[in-house]
Length: 273
Length: 332
Image 1 (cartoon, rainbow over the protein chains, first blue to last red):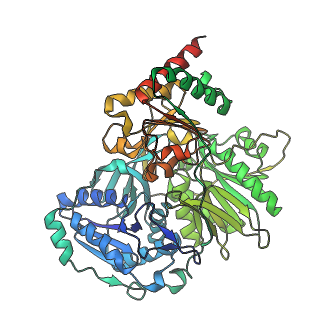
Image 2 (image 1 turned 45 degrees about the vertical axis):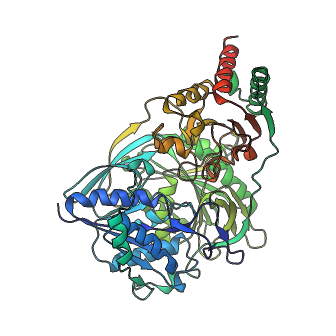
């Protein structure tokens, strides 16, 4: 098998629970919030490294984001990615999933031939999972989503196991293709000391719209078909009741209360069997 | 121009999936607000009239049905070509699909081909009175915010909706509608992908996404063997078994059981959290459940803030006692 070239799009996300929204544009405000690499992207990186290692293939991490997204890319290099490319420009700001997928795909086109694009299932901030399949559409390659295991890569074909609601599917397709992977696929490795050193010194080129030949009508806020028009904070606290089991005598009444609650709230009678 | 509301119904082996009837309800509501027709699109190998009529009984005015052996099960390329060509020809205003593994794959693929916007995993949809635009509301950032999204300029407006956000539409046998059948060409159904094998969940357990009742285990169960305790409660309630990230990361249960931001987002009728403290990561996956019962030792656990019934105490006492009581009741 020839050298495989694998591209892993990664996203820098605000740390869970600390994200703020820009009330005016409805996009995510990144300043002053600690950022991490999207946790689900680590599984994509791990998968890419495992596929590339035996064949001495190349793994390139690609990200679109503010200049600070360098950090996420360095983390990817520290884990073992060979190199990284950052797409950053104020013209990219405010991209929805359509503009993001288009921009990443344009970058992939300028990077030459590739065999595989491996994406995380979704980002934990936007939570859409749309970028992987949309990139496949822009690049006109097959999208294989929710991949939970790589069974085989040989002779320019890939065979994988895909997680669906009713079980699994085994799918095969020719390379190049886009796959999105779920957590089940592998345990992401930790960066090594060596990797961290390499990451510190790595050059991460920053590309703008002209470098990737982007159509201005398809990038950034103005190129995004969707717009966030309102942000609301849902009230999550409920007026719940509390039952305490501190001593032996509390147990029976507590169980009674749970059973009564189930009967009340599950008219279908699940509690009755 | 059709101006209508469309949805993609899903089928397995010629029988419609339950989520299709939820889409009937979503779509009917929007079509009524706009005063337009509701159309269902179904792709499959063979779909009998009696099956397709169910969509009409539940609210569709028309059913577009494309039949071909290559469409028996979901594959993105043929589905995309059939859908894109149908949408280009008929020009609907709105296209909905369920946020299932199929919907979440085909919709972004189709939306990118059509160069239109798409909103993922909506939990509310409505029509903006002044403009007629579709208002698409979805949870983001771990359920901490609800974002309302619009696609003003491009058509169709596309959205996936979270399964179980609405009850299935009721059946009205008197409703009339039209079934429009077509047979795609070989070119349309050509694909580079091969579905080699289908492996069903053979252990007979309920899948998390479809379950009415979910019982989940958290770190509070202490060790792998104790997950069985929670499983017993789940079985007794006919529930699917879920778990927090800690339980999955420790390898006590496999990933498909994970509920939370990096696992599944679910909205069952009843969610029972056992030994789960309720980190944001977990709450994001279950806090919109209709009813929540939490059983755990720590009175200050955040899970109690979202619980309708919080039971503070030792799960190793409470859960077995509960299981015993449920079993006694079944016998009597």
